[in-house]
Length: 165
Image (tube, rainbow, N blue to C red; front, side, top):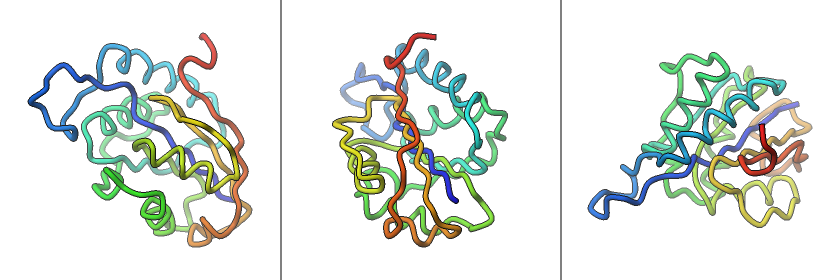
């Protein structure tokens, strides 16, 4: 079995109109939501053995906060520029490159890609993954190369406003 966490970046700032989309940082709400989701992630099993993030500042920052919450080494976060602006099929190709020795992986990226990807991989009908939302999928396969062919099961879909903690 392979377990995949797909986490959308936390809420970002639109305060600087001259800043590129790629460079936007988290806003105050994002800085509060990411640690909350990190605490929830810490309670989950299995824990990600690898974290791969989009190169956008808001995604990298979210990935760092989530990694800190589960004692994952920040220096081992993989930044993959292909996740920024990717189509769902491109994300599937990234997933298929994962080493089969890894049983649990986390990707931190963007919408609408992650909403479409979660629905395609699990047969779910999620309308929107909110900022800092996280879906956990499990696949009945021993190899990442079959992701997208083997239908996954949506184990959980969590987001900051789902519950109070």
